Length: 111
Image 1 (tube, rainbow, N blue to C red):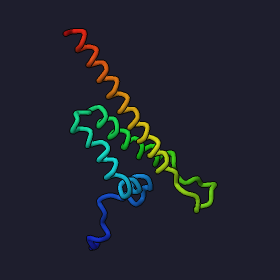
Image 2 (cartoon, helix red, strand yellow):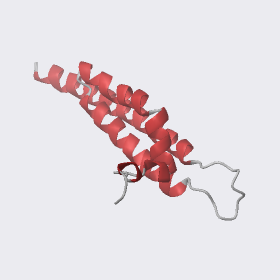
Image 3 (cartoon, helix red, strand yellow):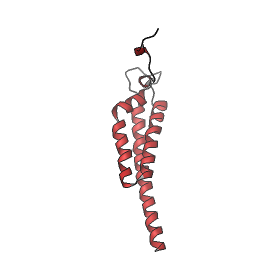
Image 4 (cartoon, rainbow, N blue to C red):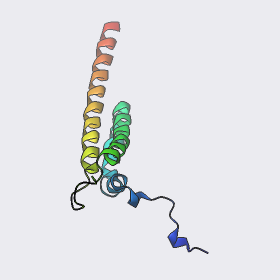
């Protein structure tokens, strides 16, 4: 019979980028995505949350260790994740600004 310590529900440690982001930046990224909900910036929250997830997947898929490079070279998944997440923050902010302008111009024309 196997001991309960040998059984794991998930293997995040087997995947570099999800494990790295979960340990180091998940809390900050969650705050960046959740706090704007207080000001009803729903699109920003959705875009940044989706950007976090997409960044993790892209970082893991394309930032991996190369077979022809010595093992001391780093995994660049964190860099790809960061770029995608920063792009999501910028995109979310631009979308919110454009929607706010559209609402103001539509509201002033109907008045």
